[in-house]
Length: 555
Image 1 (cartoon, helix red, strand yellow):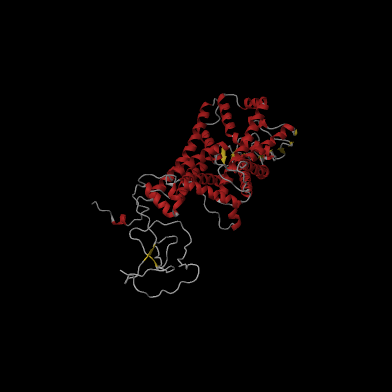
Image 2 (cartoon, helix red, strand yellow):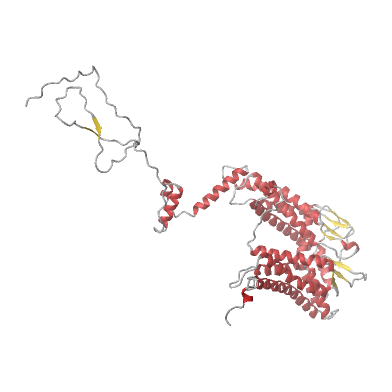
């Protein structure tokens, strides 16, 4: 009874507690993320409906409004049926702060699904992405069907386009974050020169500076809107009080205004960049002039729109917004801990400007839309003009600014690297120094006397307390027998020939000299010097006469 079933033992591993439970858990996480976002908006709408003294519809109408707002947070265009003219009017301006709610929930669901769980296998990144997105779209499809009727009906085609896009992009961002934010290889269809220019380090620096520049533009735009609202404080207050009489309506109006603050910041950035924004099909607000006949509904944030007519010096002063963004890109392009060449710095700043322009174009496209039919069909900044202006402004200021920041940070170095090759050598030297810092505990004397491999082996052995073996010595070739070390001195000893005792030597007789090795240990080596051959030197003068045989000495 305790033996496993043969069918169970032959089942694939992915079914036996493998990846199927992990994918099912990821699917549930996607459903939960969609339910949390929808539930939060539904709770808020129900609170406002309950607190309203004169509700137009019952709880069903409030739930339809909540479903429509949830779809609007994904970019879905809504259709408002109860208008003054009786004709349905589209609502295409998406409050960008609402988009953060489903995006963050889906991002977290995908990220948590890839976290390792003790005792359970982890699904692949692609499987988690598909499972979380599928679970989210299950709830989204039901909401689309429910929201096709009601005071804020959802446009079916727009929902089919935007809902999977937002859910998939947010889940992909969560999977990428859980995987360590890897930067994969560039597409193979790109030319080799382009792939060489778009190095990984350069792309990282450009992405960082582009994000910083886009945030600087948004911050400058938000500051412009705030200053203008304070400047037109009376008109803002009148608009706010005119639209709502009771506190519940004013609370709803205040929450809607807060949700549209990011949109207003993008509009302010577009105004500072130059292209401005459209207030209907025949009106355009730019720093140079406010032309056309605007169709402005009563809304507090629209009170910040500048007055009609030609721009003044105060309007032209908004040019400081893109200038500051360019300076921010220049500052974030030049790293403190690296020395880059002139070409490297300029190219990184240019890539950062292009990235800032792309981000600004995406935000401008999301911040605008239709507010009705006829003259209100175009409302907000033109995305491609805004993105192009952001690229030109930040490149014109950021590239020379980055070169200036580089020169300023290197002013005390004494040597300015002007070519990428020099920069590469400098970076390589810095990496080598950082690699050597890990061996600070090793003895320095050994590092200077022996070969690198023997040095590190001996130092590691010393640091380990003798636990490591000796470094394997290389085989040494035998020296030739005739080879004699240079500079070794051998004592010379006169040896008497065997046999009869020699007769008395006459002057000039030579005695044979023989080199005799001393017993015991070899003498210490003398200073290295050139070897001098031993040569018997004849005395000056006439050669000695041959030795004559004679009588031996008397006893």
